[in-house]
Image 1 (spheres, protein in one colour):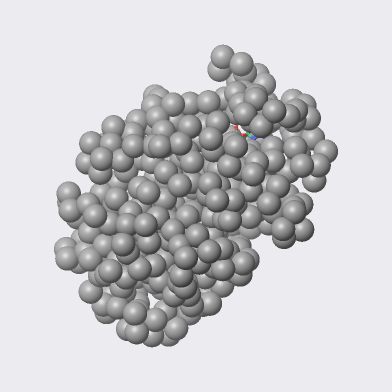
Image 2: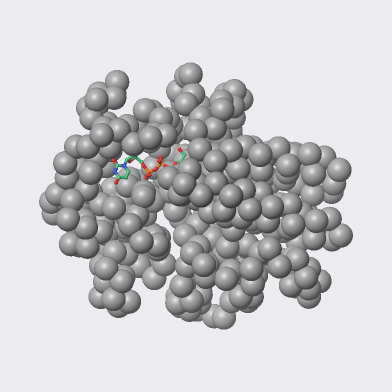
Length: 337
Ligand code: UFG
């Protein structure tokens, strides 16, 4: 069964392509490498041991997307293609409204003319804003978004819900990702941040390898045990598996699932776990709080565990070990770093 992956050469898309093949699906990857590199496709092929179908196309090009759908006839679509940096979205909101909302509407206009069994959307725990109780479950009231990026995910969920109400033959699943980290255990695919990383784990690995002088931990005066923010870090392969299980899900036609491991780790705990598992030291200092950071959020993942029988396989330490192996691979093989 063919599954179309928009943004399939990205961090989560590439790992999902591999997991789809492991479960007997045929991924059809669309990407224009604006946030990735062409070697990702070659490395997906190394992992799966064969060629993968790939189209180098801008997701906003409706004519091309339409002809790819006509030609490939996918039964499902997983829509990863979007921008995802919270800070950047504050500085350049129109880029986010265009790439995350206008392009979503363009994609839906194309698939309106085709029959698709499943549509899976990359949503984010950012839709919860700063929640009044933790852990958050799927019924936790949505708060005003902290950033244009967060707002695009809230609006995206609404657009999809309204659109698929008119298409009862398609099962819609919106996965609210918590903090994806790590890399494939083969060290062939992983995260490829452009420029200075804004996310914690790539900043840690780039500091450990010497590309960055020092990690700044944004705030140590939060009302948490060690004063640093708490997040729910999930291995990217576990997150990828949630997409495959969503395709198999015949539970209902409109599904929302939190995808997180269900416990919170502080920034300092992540740094110390990284040091311990990889037997090295990371230079860090404490800095000011970062605008837009919520003090604490982690998932109630009961729903996805019961309905999709999803369980995370990898621990935080394994994820940090894989992230470090990937960073070294980037430096030695691709001279990135
Ligand atoms: N952090 C640092 N120093 C850094 C980078 C991050 O201390 O150099 C801290 C942040 O302040 C935060 C934690 O590490 O407390 C995690 O930060 P990330 O940037 O890795 O992740 P966020 O939780 O801010 O963002 C992630 C995703 C977004 C998503 C958001 C929802 O990257 O796409 O979760 O909360 F929208």
